[in-house]
Length: 327
Image (cartoon, rainbow, N blue to C red; front, side, top):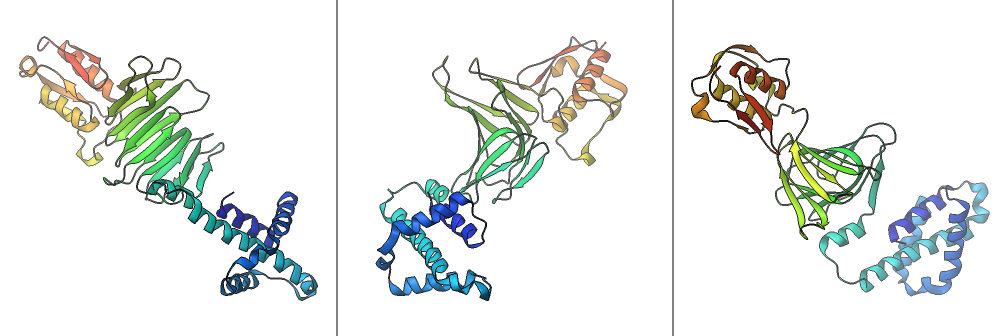
């Protein structure tokens, strides 16, 4: 049991909020330490007693039981102090981030049946989806690491010196600053990581059974990976419904007498997805008029391809246009 846990139990005891089990535990602690409190310097013991007296708020009618009550409470605090020194002098030296984790008990947040917004100490924001759980330190060390079970949208504050890592079952996502969605429920067979903005590195926690190497994949906006847990296989693909990543003010959604290559380049910039085509074949092709305001990316590509007599295919990270010229 850590000093922080002992302090919490003590505080509940002082506030008359402890459970019967905790009350018995407090009494056992008192009996166990007996004369050990004399090992501390008198000045230290006096300072602890003053702290206890200032925290107590007992009516005058209860003064008869004051001495025993304070003696028990003071003994608990003395035990906590003794435990702190034991931790400090007898625990082996650990890396900085591990000692930070010991000093800051992990915070556990669950979302229940509703979404829940969680603000982390570095300024990052996590939106937990229903039936999800997030574990993180109250203060980050040299690395920013959290553990997710369920589904959450991460908006990570950028810091190139301190990468942000999300451990979600068998998959870890590493970023410097971006927004992405992770779906990793404990009982589901697939783990999904979807990038909204920026760039992330996703890798499995262990080496693949097939390649004997840890699988690592770079994702950019509107790309995702699906890790199939049963097959121990990771698949990279474009998302089913790409979202615009550029500011609304810079979007152009209707075209009149605009060269097709120019439209494709505008769509690349708007959605962050490469569109591959032969510029020589399409250099002379123009769209007379097209209003694509209400259409998604794939619908826009379909409309343009129909006008050209062309077709398109989706690869793992791009859209490939196959055309023989203008229709």
